[in-house]
Image 1 (cartoon, helix red, strand yellow):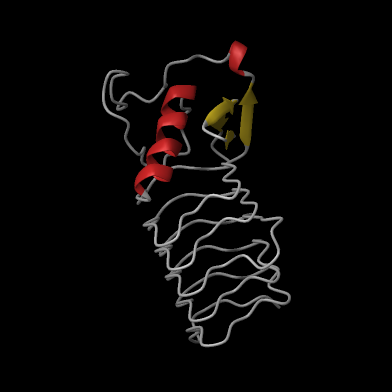
Image 2 (image 1 turned 30 degrees about the horizontal axis):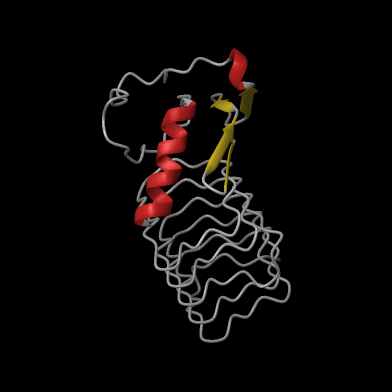
Length: 185
């Protein structure tokens, strides 16, 4: 779980077990080195870390991933499970294939973003009318996502899993919603 607010970071290290459940350690007791053997050395430039639920990441890795994402708006296939992106402007960002499972996004701006293949299971936002206008959500997993009141005008929902998602009051005018899209019951 990573909180990024006003350029200052606070964190807890989260490791996900084989069943996908988070195991949270306070920073004081957590190792500050990644357990992933394929991680770049600390002296390397910030980079986006590929998703992998069997590794834990250090404060520095997570912090650099978020800073890079917010600066470049590029994070394809990155691992950002449980992040808190308060009021982040990710308009036109490339998040294709990213793992944002359980992410919290208070008033995030995602209009025009490439969210194809993104895992947004359990995604929630406290901001009414989340703007996903024109977003490419092809194949995204939005199961259990809270999208109440979201602006999905013109969004590509081809192959999206919206089962058990809350889309009450969402605007789907002009959205591409073919038969393979799984809608809530």
